[in-house]
Structures are given as structure tokens and as C-alpha cells.
Amino acid sequence: MRTVGRIPAMCMAMKSFFHAAPEAKKVREIGRGRTDGRQAPAPALSIVAMVADEEDRKRLANIAGRKQLQVRFADGREEAWVIANQLDAPVILCDRDLPATEWRDLVQLFASARHRPSVILISRVVDEYLRQEVILHGGYDVVAKPLREDDVVRSVRLAWSYWHSAVKMSPQASTRTVKKSGPF
Image (cartoon, rainbow, N blue to C red; front, side, top):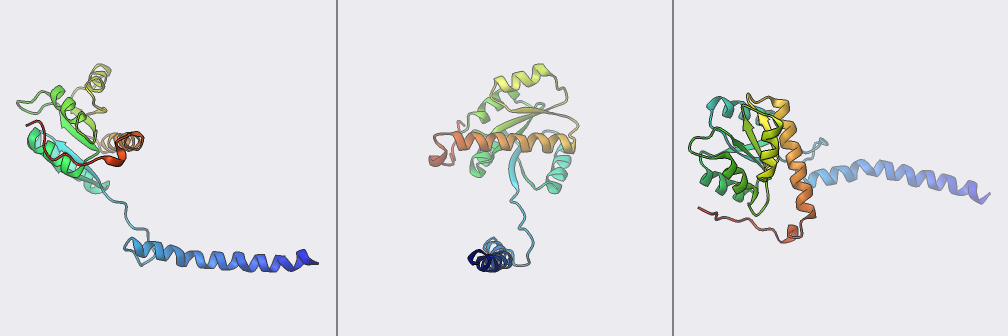
């Protein structure tokens, strides 16, 4: 008889738990700035891009607008270095065809930044040799021109995921600070 008496009590406890759950969800969302019951939007992923061609800039800006990416364009390596370190940007896109700039030096420079961003090279020619060379110089991936939305988004999200997991495993992860000056 005792077990029969507990069942209604358990049912009441479960009922109150499930009826309270929506209220708890609402409290969590209020903390994130939402009171209408909808999920708060995920924060945009910050990336720095050094792109030579104006058409590629427009295409990248359009992709970023649709896919919750915050792109900051830089015209030179000094400006890109400052922006990347101020934002602690996890992903940097570098155009292979930047005037008066050697892409290998750029990849090495940005890969050596204190926050260790994932560097993606944008190139008209993409083959295994170039991918291996980018990785050898500290980069993450190569994306082909003309820029296609699915290629860019896939590469950027995977690069962010790689960066994020590397930061978690890094012994300096808890003491990481933004470096505001560079080698310039």
C-alpha cells in the first residue's frame, strides 16, 4: 500500500518540475536579454580579412552578413595585425595576391600571434602542394577564388573549431592577454 501512496506524490513532483521548466527557461533568457521566449542569437564570429580584389570583398561581406560572421577588412599587414590582436580574432583570411606582400610571411606572422589564430589563405589556384605549404608555414586551410559561400563558411567554422579546441588545451588559456603591439 505504501508504494501506491508514493506514486501520486512522484507524479505531482514531476508535474511541478515540468511546469516550472518553462519559467526557468524564461529566467535564463532574461539574463541573456530575451523576454519573448525565443532563443537569443549566437554572437557573431569575428574574423579579419586582407583581400585585394574589391569583388572578393563584396562577396565576403555578403557571406558574412548571411552567416553571422563579423568581418573586419584590413588594407595592410600592420592594420590587420592591430585589428586581429584587438579583437583576439580566431580566424584570419589572407589573399595570396596582395600587392607587395609575400603570402608565406603573412601566414607565418599571423600564425605566430599570441592568441594563435587559424590563418586561411585565399587563392586562385588550390592544390595539395599549396595546402601542405600553408600548413607548413603555420596556416590552417586554403579557400579557392571565386569565393563560394559554402566553402568559406565551412573553412571558417572548422578553423574556429580548431582554434577553440587548441585554446582550451593551451596551458596559457587562462592567462591569455591581448597583445596590442606587433613586430612593426
